Amino acid sequence: MDIYVNATGKKYYKPNQITLNFDFNCKNTDYEATLSNGVENVTNYLAFLNKLGFKKEEIKTLSFRVTESRFYNETIKKYEKDGYLFQQNVKLKFDYDMEKLSKLMEETSKLQNPPLYYISFNLKDNKTAEQDLISLAYKEAEFQAQAVANAAGKKLKECAKISFEPFTSALVSPTSFERDMCFKKSERFGTSTSEQIQQTFVPED
Image (cartoon, rainbow, N blue to C red; front, side):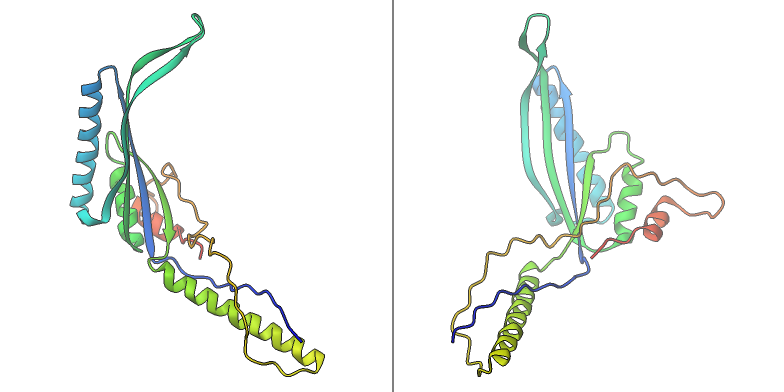
């Protein structure tokens, strides 16, 4: 008698890493000015991050481009050149630290020309988590097979074959954090923006 079972491993993890994606954008009619202004904005912000204690190796550029900007002219029914666009995406990863994150958010909000950014919470060691989940799935499958064997009055032998589907689950917290969330200093309780973020925000596992 052959017994075939399917099982799933499920486990929740607390995030231990914070990832920020920064989008730097600027526009100018002149190519050289667009490139120069864009690079200057990025360079200044990276220096700002360094002053906050972030290391150079924690900051990586994911994409960089300067493209021609075009718009559709309804009058003449054709696209026309409208200067140039500078776009650069930078990723920053660091160990989970809400105090460090809230400080970055608070200080960035004070800048005259801050970049757009998106925050996600994830795991540093995805491979170990995936191994844990596969192990849980195997144990669940073994339990199901034993239950079927018992019900059929059979003795379960060693597992003859194992097949795992590709691991596609993203080990990232579903929590979202918008850059424009409103935090203002409370005169009544004397709490700063940084303190409010730490007190009111806990990412989901």
